[in-house]
Length: 517
Ligand code: ATP
Picture (cartoon, rainbow, N blue to C red):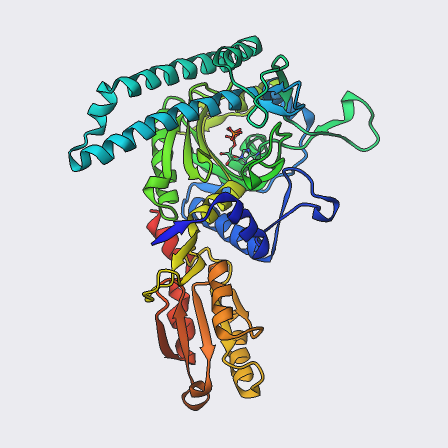
């Protein structure tokens, strides 16, 4: 039986194994900023490659760009971010801690959902195979009461958020008696809007004129380049532009490791379509993106969650949520953004942001369906699912356990580790290094002779290396080595010349890409 590791142990594991460090740790760290270590950067690059290749390489009608982080300040006026990219901020007067008012209310709703799930789990246990969840939900008085309460709060929250009604949010917090999670204090300030954009100053120009923003999303770099890309690539609608890059948000609360950072990386794709066809494309992208996730993660960890309140630019929006250790939360957003962005840029810049349709002989501003995922959240989801404490396969003793990062081989930081049985035997070391120097031209490998074989195996398990290659005394005689499989622990003996042919196809990204189709 394998069990997932709790969140605290996961963050410790990420640090101890060179995945993620707190930024500027020697100065006690900078809140909500993190650095990726040697294994972290390899894993993150693989995840980004998986996204990029599935978008750009496998779709004839999607091309990539890499736009500057700094953009003309008018970009953010047109996009609505200067006026509306706000979160509702509330302070607790006693603890002096800041919170997002909407998140406090959502946490309250999560608790109600928890109570419903508890009732269902209890009944399931009682009725066994005869249990009918739909019927139980429709008839059990407790579940019905909780569901009514949940729906009522959800409606009030959505209305207040859509209307930008800060007093309304405060009223919900007061009516529900929501208290500060750590101290229990209900001594709250009023709720006020807080803009999430970081600003800085351009060159020597003082004041508003020289005010620049660090981009809070990568999407606008795509929109402002729409006509450049369309003309230079001669793409016909529908077509998409993909981009991976840093984004910055001055998040009010950032307490969940790399789930919510102030500097993070987004992988966004804007798909430009004929007006009127956006609903169809929205559904197609929902399905395609879920499939992409299912190639990495099990169905029960993923779910769709429709937005209750739509952003100023959207006519439909859904999140793909992942079950993180702190519950189901947004991993990716899919938004039907209408012609809002291109239309707004056209108006403010005075430049045409239109497409001439050769079939209808008309020019129009295309509609857009966006898929937007955080590389860091995907990284966290991947670690959450892959990191396990389990009984050593093939061993009877339940106390004989190991920590293993069961990553898909295509995204594992290191594909194979090569180790000599004894580090003080020149012939074993020589042969192991020869294999290492050959395989390193094909995929990411590591040479390691810094411990006993058992210890080295455990170390590779902890970082998710799918194969360990050991050179022993028989190897010197017959040119064969053992290859140990991370998941089954089975060992096979193969000729050293056959290693690349055996391991290469198993760690090939093509497998993963194919299973996402
Ligand atoms: P949330 O509701 O969690 O604040 P959001 O709805 O503001 O997220 P989007 O604007 O839709 O997020 O951004 C798209 C994706 O970018 C998200 O699905 C998430 O994966 C990622 N993302 C957004 N904000 C952050 C952040 N502060 N840290 C890490 N990733 C983020």
